[in-house]
Length: 427
Image: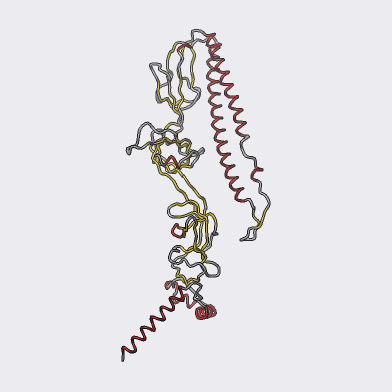
């Protein structure tokens, strides 16, 4: 008797389950579907960066080589020692002139040559400054209305922003080149002053001529045997030199920002890449691959540089890619189909929307979202198990939020309203 009742009951139960499953999975089924959401987040902004970490060494940013021409006279003596700190105009060595007339002609010729060089550089600076974009190139054009907000925006805003960024980059490189050329002019003027001083000595019928320094720094080397250069002067300012691997040279270019760290200085120091060698170093790495020299200069205005010395070892971080204040989401929140990317977004109507987004750089597990979603919109953090666009959703009950005090403090109208919604809302 029990089996006669049990078997039909089991069959009936299985039939009901199978029928419901069919209705749920049937295409265009009228049965509502819900997605269970465990974690969701609002879209936020953050600065994303990718960098390459390197170990490097400080070296003198510049060396000046001082030569002695024995055809100009007989060498007498050095006036400095190795390790001496010198400035522009410091006397370096003396020599005795035998043919004063010929020496005067030589000095005047050298002065004229340097003056011609200065004139040429000044013309080059004028031409450089004409390359700077005018402000009119970034003037905004006719406004239209944004479809999403109804607010007036520029129809060419993207192009204008790109143009403005390009103009800033051009201005940066122009100013850097102008600064280098102005430094060359200063160095030529120092050389002219040195030669004019020697010329004045000759015109006063002096035969002992003194050669002075045209730059400041530290005497690195003196060639007592008079092999040229007879004196090497290292500048007091330093730069960073290191080696890049073959793959790193593909990511690092001139102008990229760098952050330098040294145990001699408490604060980090800002700089930028000024050179990446095209040819590799002569020696191979331990792995047998090529390495390429690079150098980083310190940014103007940086403090505490006096504590750094050539030969100090430093660490640096070279920023290869950066997106400032960018919308971003975890990489696992993206749904990828071919070359397209999507986010599951919770709409104002309480449904899930599968929305296409444009992505940019990736850094430490987060992806830049360039378009397709706005800051503050809610997205599903782990969408793989709930790819049901258009469906409604349910979220877990957070028992820790349901306390006696929260119920006690809620007004009766709110309690009744939520109770009726829970009973009458069609799910």
